Amino acid sequence: MKLAIHPHENGFSDRWIKYCEEKGIAYKIVSCYDSDIIQQLDDCDALMWNWNQNDFRAALMARQLTISLELRGKKMFPDFKTSWHHDDKVGQKYLLEALDAPLVKTHIFYVKEQAEKWLDQTTFPKVWKLRGGAGSINVKLVRSRADAQRYVNKAFGRGFPQIDGWGRLKDKFWVLKRDKNFNAVKGIFKGIARLIIPTELARFSQREKGYIYFQDFAPNNNHDTRLVVIGNRCVGVRRYVRENDFRASGSGIKAYEPELFDKRCIKIAFDIAKKLDVQSVAFDFIWDGDDPKIVEISYTYIIGPFYDDCPGYWDDNLQWHPDKVNLQYYQMEDFIKYVAK
Ligand SMILES: Nc1ncnc2c1ncn2[C@@H]1O[C@H](COP(=O)(O)OP(=O)(O)O)[C@@H](O)[C@H]1O
Ligand SMILES: [Mg+2]
Image (tube, rainbow, N blue to C red; front, side, top):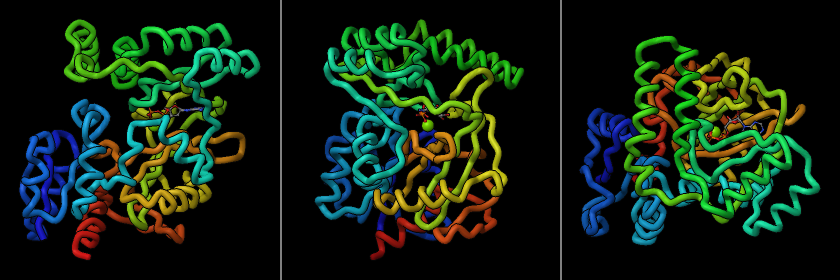
């Protein structure tokens, strides 16, 4: 067995490589951006590539490469079913509705007049989102019909940048308030610099337009529930919302005690992960009254203490197992078995 691994700074690949070294699994390092990548993989059984929403190159070709290699008989992590909907809340709406998953009611329009007609008869507040983005950066509360009209005008006008520089800077001030340290101050300067000198991602990504996405607002959530399912393991982090805000993702305030997690969410997470037939999936749950609802899914997530600090996982019988959590090793354990099949 031989794997190909595309390395990624701050991605999963460092741990995948460490796992291969520890277990004596043969691997070679490749770049998926090479034009002859298909041929480069001729001596490999599988490819692992932890592409994410900040990689504009991956946005251009990762899905296409994945399905092509699967048709050639290569095993992939992430495979097509795991990854096609990544960073695509529009795709996720159809996918989760098709699987009868408890998605928060989501409304999408591709025609301005239809969006306006719907806005005339709906209630507020609503939550507006772009299809992509993480850490709540493209998620806003829309308080009124007039407020919503501004979003509609922009969606069917010049569109939205994929990175909201001002929103991100505002978030850096929240981090400063939370941490009060030197790193937080550095973050503010970085945020200002990014307004003046745009990142590669900002320079090469298209503006988002031609669609508008609204979700019903579920009030009174002081946290969301992040559940990651890999095989028969489910790891949980409760994330609290920012001060005077409704958004938890990216707040950095978290808790892990297993008793904080409602078994209904864990059961739904396992059920939907099975229906999705995915190698890895993170769910964001919120409460709609007494009902757990999904707001989005993602095959990838941050690496490091955020999940390493989880004290264990549930199995699909909802039994708790204390463990030294390492999500990238869980992925590897399952993937190696799959490649060896
Ligand atoms: N419909 C909603 N009602 C109430 N809160 C929501 C809703 N959708 C999202 N949120 C909150 O906003 C946060 C970010 O939303 P999410 O869709 O997960 O975007 P991101 O991709 O940025 O994480 C969530 O963690 C949750 O706390
Ligand atoms: Mg989220």
